[in-house]
Length: 225
View 1 (cartoon, rainbow, N blue to C red):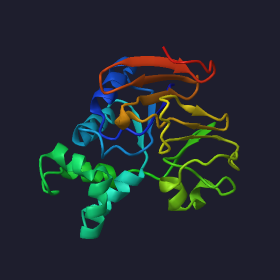
View 2: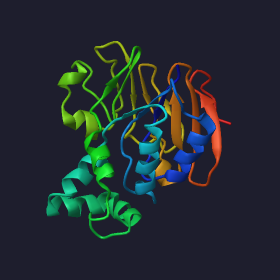
View 3: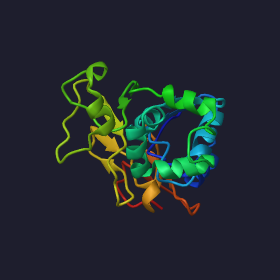
View 4: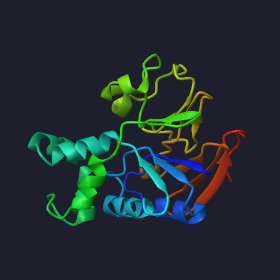
């Protein structure tokens, strides 16, 4: 069984489509998406549609990111709406063809509301942003799980599992591999790459909005080809 993690998508539908075609996710595969499906990129609506379809073909584990939090809050509060707009929410609204929320399908709201805080696997755990290393996952504050960037020193987690996360942009376009933690937010929405990591092998595939595809390996530590 293959286990994949996909970094912050941010409306970058073309890059996601390239990865989906290349890896042909299907029965027996687990695909953990690390949150931030919406905002900044051009087609948040298309991204959610693709993920809803993917859910029918494999085991999709959709984590919540801070941009999902902002979008859900923006629906009910004007001050939150204005804040969300300045953080890339304008591109999300544009993808639905409206200046409000009336054209967002109920299935999309259900998807956003149904995203989860973290996912635990045999050797890894998956979060959007970061954790406090000494706290069990069920006790982690929202500030750490959804908002906190990785700092200069990242300590191993008390669970002994490796952390797979996004949120902290790696503007080099390469995953950050610290051994006990791997960040795969490789700046898809900023002229970078969308990364999909096969966690059991350390192989990763990257696609961009121009439709380019490349692959690499955490174990090799070399530039992807």
